[in-house]
Length: 72
Image 1 (cartoon, rainbow, N blue to C red):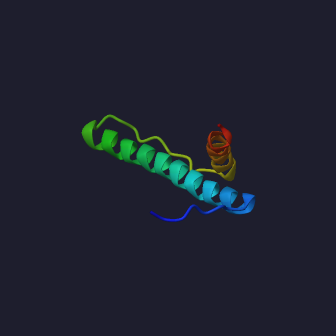
Image 2: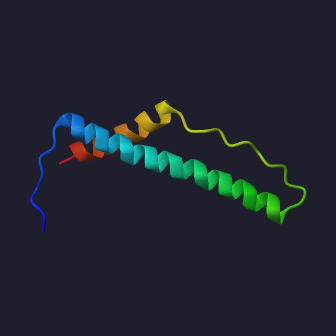
Image 3: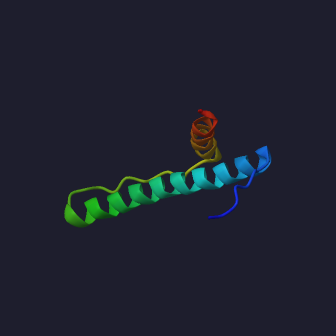
């Protein structure tokens, strides 16, 4: 097992932002895949544009993760 590593608040926030970016990016990717799937399987389906993720969405997700870390 690895030694427990105490991270500074800045390191923790950086890690959480990276995790949040991955979560939000994956969500957008799944939405895009769903649009392609629907268009391929239903000729009448009109593809809807999928908005790219924003910094605000990443921050919101990071705050959720941080709230979880703060729970005892």
